[in-house]
Image (cartoon, rainbow, N blue to C red; front, side, top):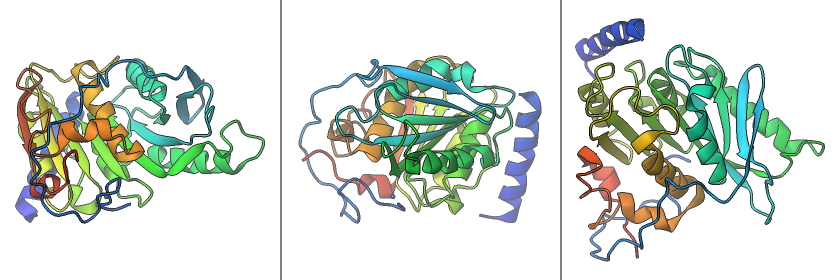
Length: 291
């Protein structure tokens, strides 16, 4: 990355903030060759629908935790999503989206900070869950899947999702309309960059620049048609189902989600009703599609 480009991106970041796989491993597909399958995608699944778990919410000083009420009810362990808020926001702004992920079986550690860019509190959420998972007196004991952790966030928190992925414990990142104060060159996990077609705060061109900086990892760029900068707050809007599918594939190995992103007949690739732009880099094209 040139010094000129880095300085330009930092300058853009100042303006924007003022106004408001395990490395490359995939679930069972690490090091796979470029996919040539023409198999159809699996039967459609609505990942935007509420999952099977009832949800508990614990609001603390540093984090708010969203998690299945009956964790481990069938002997399962629950993957983790650490969350970063947009500038000036708190987890409650995104509560319906974070509850949705918990209903899908994730433990969500949302940093309460309204200035999440450097991902310090986000990464601390992993530390807390590590302690609770090891504590026999904790309801989280032995029920958290600390081998599968994703980072996600919106706006400034989207940049933080990239910054959090520098942590080797993080396995994938989902930056939603991310600010520019992040360097994808420093992460080595698969990443799903999301932009809004009508976002006038974090322009799609900025998110595309972050996507292009992610050429060393499987990276996908999705631009939600008609979405503005606040379209992802609340229940996540049109961002909810795709982010859920991505997290379920990379953190749970959910094969029903694979065909939405990967393979010759990628389900999202042709969905022009949802996306105004869609791109997959060479590394993402190498991830096999459905068998």
